[in-house]
Image (cartoon, rainbow, N blue to C red; front, side):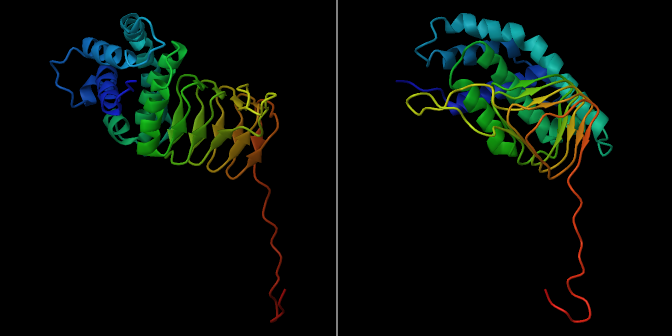
Length: 252
């Protein structure tokens, strides 16, 4: 059985990047991006025996590209608005790993919505390998999404993220536990967090389970969070307790 080609899927992502951000791509300007995407994607979809009409499925994806582009431009603007170190949109597109990750994720998510197996995971894993940011293609992420720095971020398959959400490096949106069927196989059910609009989560925080973080909430760094949080909250790590163990030559 023929398998999808990683090299061809990399080519697909180069073409998607060209269509989304043509001013920042090294794909030749004479390329007809939509036609090239359709051709590569049709070829790769043809490797999956459960897909009966790869040409139609590729056409549906191309029709979705304007909405993918709109969302990705909001993500780039979110970086501009959240990082005072940014000097230009060119810097955002060329230098920030979140852009690469979100181009891959939003492409993979659209294919996931169309019922395409395996290919969405290959696409997101390419970005994961390049950036250290792991977003499952089934996760739902709204517009104006930003990850600063990014290495070590994990977003699980049933995560739901609203608009204008900001994550820092090392954040995990994961499952607290799993349910199993009678044969001991894990059940694919909602098990990851819901982050409402305008939530910020600082570095190395883990939010686990099907918990809801209310809108306009700030979750500080190094927090372990397994319960719902109401809107407009601030969740911070407990202060360290300082005790003078060593005074006047005394030990512990």
